[in-house]
Structure formats: C-alpha cells, structure tokens
Length: 298
Image (tube, rainbow, N blue to C red; front, top):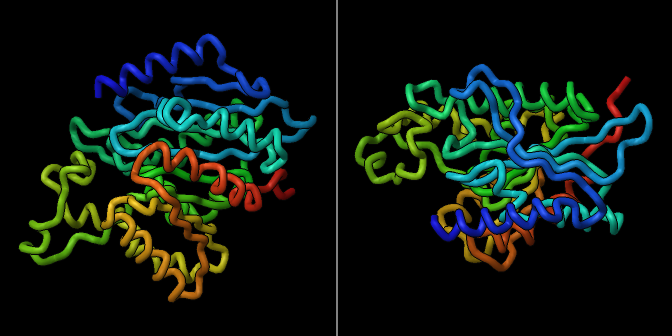
C-alpha cells in the first residue's frame, strides 16, 4: 500500500509538470458530479478529453471506464496510462476521438448499497447522475450510440452489469479480467465455503446471499440473450489470471454461445495486474471504436 501511494504521488507530480505529453489531450483528475445518493453528495471522477475539439455542432462519444476493487478514479490515468494509450491510438488513426470518464468505485462493486456506512447508491450515480452531468456540461453525445462502458476486474463486472441492466443506454461493453462470480448457493454448507471477504460489505455484512444474487450476472443471461437489440460484449483475461476468474469468464462466454450469442474472448500472457490491463486496453478500444456512433439519431 505504501509503495502504491508513493508511486501515485510521484506520477501525479509528473502529470502536473507535463499533463498533456502526447497530442495536447486533456486529463483532469478528481472532478465531481452531483449525486444525492452518495454519502458526500457527489461522485468523484477523472476525465480524458482528446486534443481536437469536435467539429461544429458535433459531439464526442463517451466511454465510462471503471477500476478494480479498492481502487479510485485516478487508477486508470496513473496506473493504466490511459492518456498515453488513447493519444497514440488516435494519432495513428486506429480509433476515432472519444472522451473517457473514469468514476470512483472504491470497494463498492459498483452496486447500490444504502446500508449505514455503505458506499451509497453507486450504480445509480454511475449510470444516471454521471452521464447526466457529462452530457449537460461537455460536448458528449446524449444517446445510446454515443455511450459505452468498460472496466477491469470489479469494473469489468460493473461494465457488464450496467449494460445488462440498461440495454438501451450503452452501445457496447468490455470486460478485462472481469471479476465474475457464480450465484451464491442455497445450501448453507456450500454457501459457508464461498469466499466473501473481497466484497467488503457491498451485499450486506455479513453477506446476504439473496442480495448478492440479485446483482449477479448469470441470472440476467436469459433476458440478455433473448434481447435482439442487446449490447455487444467483449471479454479478455490473462493466461495466468486467477483460475476462478478465468473459469467464470469462460462460463459466461460459453453460456452466451449456447444461446447463439457470439462475444469476442481473448486470453493474453499476463497476471491479474496493470501490466496486463494496460496491454489489453488498446485492442478493447479498437473493438469498441466500431460499435460507437458519431451522431445521435434525429
């Protein structure tokens, strides 16, 4: 933890000295969007804006990019070097300009938690309050074709969850090492064997199995598969990622395939760490580029 804090401080110092190294894009850390359901009354986020302003009367598409457990809005800018990656892709013509909004999620699992001392209504904040704020205050497309969601680990789960729960709000969703879990079993003995420490009270303390399952991805699959206008998904994991995580990702991709839904799945050399996710971000963004619109209908 001390090493991570030292690295963040050092990198923040470098960003302050040269915040727009490639292509004069803008990276803003620690902004806030009003959100009444959050304990502080706001949702912190970081923002990447491309170098060039959109053409007259045009707006950018926006990616809502989420971090892993115990992370924050600075993770992707500092640890994931998102600005450098996106600037390079845009400059090379491999993707078109887009904004990237990176919200705080802490250890919330990006779900609503109204419990005393809980993280607050995080799902509502990220899917409603934050897009409303972005689209009212920045040149962002305000339609499904102009929004996407993605993330790593806990944030990969959150990205898929939001696309399933709000299928008319997002054009696409990608998950890097998504922290996907099977539903909690009804059998008390089997439930007692399941690890729960990593959920940090997001589904109640002690963990409430019914509440956990209400936010689980697998029960949502039948409705997702049946939806002919479903949000496309993209999955990536590491060859040396956690075995349970790899298996759960493979299981959800297999379930989709059994339902006649194809979803890109890739496994790259690497472990559950930033070296892997930084490498996997570029191909995910290139896939995403083909799914985003540059205009809203009408």
